[in-house]
Figure 1 (cartoon, one colour):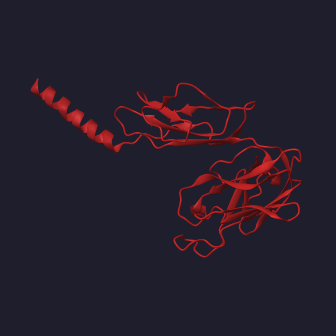
Figure 2 (figure 1 turned 135 degrees about the vertical axis):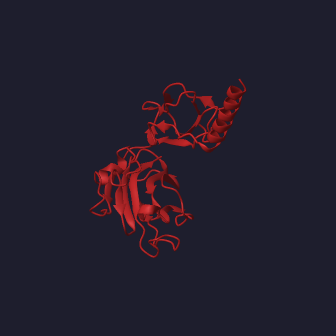
Figure 3 (figure 1 turned 180 degrees about the vertical axis):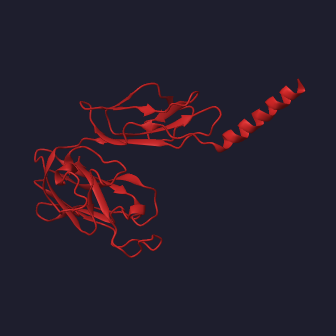
Amino acid sequence: MYKIIFWFCFMSFVIAGFSQDVRLSPPRASIGMAMVSRDKPAALTYDFRMQGSEIRYTTDGSQPSQKSKKYRKSIRISKPCTVKARAFHPVFEVSAVAESVFVSRGHTFSILSATQPDTRYVAGGVSMLSDGLFGDTDFRQHYLGYDMGPVEIIINPDPKKEVSLVNIACMIRQGAWIFGPQSIRVFDGLGRQVGEELIQDAAVNTDPCHRVIAIKIQAERYSSLKIVVEPLSRIPDWHDGRGQPAWFFIDEIWIE
């Protein structure tokens, strides 16, 4: 009898100690980033199959806790937001956050011209910059890749609608020498600069991610807009590629 009690206590101690060192994997989201609107919502689902676990999520960008809303079925997303989810279990350590970003579909426009990317990274061509689809972590698909700048893209917005925001989605994967840009400028059809965004942390060491850069411009109706992206001029000293030109990978542009 005492041996059974001892063995039970011993195993409980081992399991408790083991569980403190084991962290749950984050839930797998069906969507990493997508465009949505009231008439074209998206359905976000999670896949996590550990018995006794549960997924909690938020839609306001805050960190999920055990008090957050419990995931039960597909989440309908019809307006811009950031959904964060984590897996919880009574024994194991809570998972890292799975993040899904939803942005507005914005106004329609056409692409008049764009700097040609490197021939190895042309994806579906310039037209994919406005197809409403985002790339994933594979930079060989759905991205235009540039190893020198500046990158110039001229678009033709709907002249009946006012534009006050230009959004650009790009990849950051510094291990593959892919960095975010150091600046983005926007010019109107007369060559006047109407907006600028200086990216102060372009050379900072960061994890791979999909980054959205929003450039505020003077709210007007434009016949055309020229977007000038300046990639990082040289890879910083902390990187193995120090001193070399940084790659810039872009996959989507949209305006609001």
